[in-house]
Length: 163
Length: 274
Length: 53
Image (tube, rainbow over all chains, first blue to last red; front, side):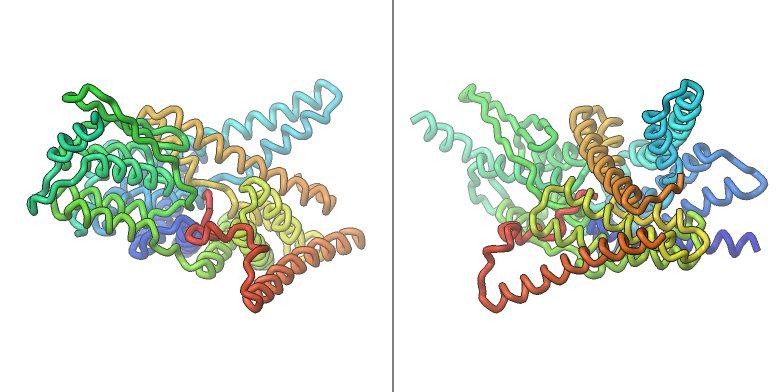
């Protein structure tokens, strides 16, 4: 039953990855890698958060982004594209929209609150969701970019033998 | 007379195996255009500098490259005539294209491995920059499917997914139309997110489905400019803080505009989902 | 709730009108071979792909 859920999660993440990849005009061979990597990354996060491990969202997203980054660098030599081509669109399904919305909601209600207690409550909502959201996104982007820098020699050579 | 001396002298510096002399100034102009197009199609600064350095080494040119948020500066100091030249090229107005990024990187390797002459390189470059984009109808359908999958990933039910699909389809088509007609990016984002949010609120208006709040929340996510944020961090890691900040601010500005559109849509529909 | 339905229908109607207007505009231009209304015409190689995503 759990495997079905993981597979569903990976499938929809793959679909989202392909769709958002198409907006940035990648070369045709990159689509299937996008789908695979997006699916793997999101499924990793799903497993880390919903299995008995119960990790927090920031840590789980960071590990999932590392997985995406490493897979992207590994597969870029087969796809003959720079790894950014499929690692960036694969990150997009993992962006936490709800935290961002709660941040803005907290901010807006904060501005319209008159009493200190209410103000403090909304300030708390705004900043706590804001921190979670920012560190989550920061963690994800770091997780994807760091493998490219670690394997620098590798990442910048993949288009060499296409000619 | 000075100019002729330079032309005479520097023209000798670049020869290829077929011994046709190439004016080195043409090479610098090509390099500046190359860097500007790489910047325009969304490459990270580290990629631009590596590619340009690779080409410059292959052609025995000594140049310093400075990447600014919307232009590229190539400065050259000629040791013999003790003159310095700066080749400046503005970033062209073009959409992010990893296809162009890949092909231009390939071109730099081809030049470095001495597989193409200067004329061939210039021809290939022209072919790359005029290559057609992905079919816009395909992008429209794929983006709508992608946003629908987003809704599912956040836990939406099939009705919410359908609403999001329709909202994204209409909003993205509107975005394509408005960008074609040359409207300012921020106005486009505001208007498109407004219409998408209103269509996405159909779950509340007509009592469709069990998760209408997810439909509204997810219906505008296709507009979020994810790639500039990630490129901005890449640039920061490599020390190009100016370009990093500029990319981040551009993306933040667009995100702000789309949140305003979402807020306007929610205010109009009198939704109180938070 | 009725207000909501009216508002929603008005916005959707405006959007559909915008689409129709543009289609008719393009059709009209292609018949008359005029392109004065399309202010973005010089960017023909960039077109609708000026995406900033």
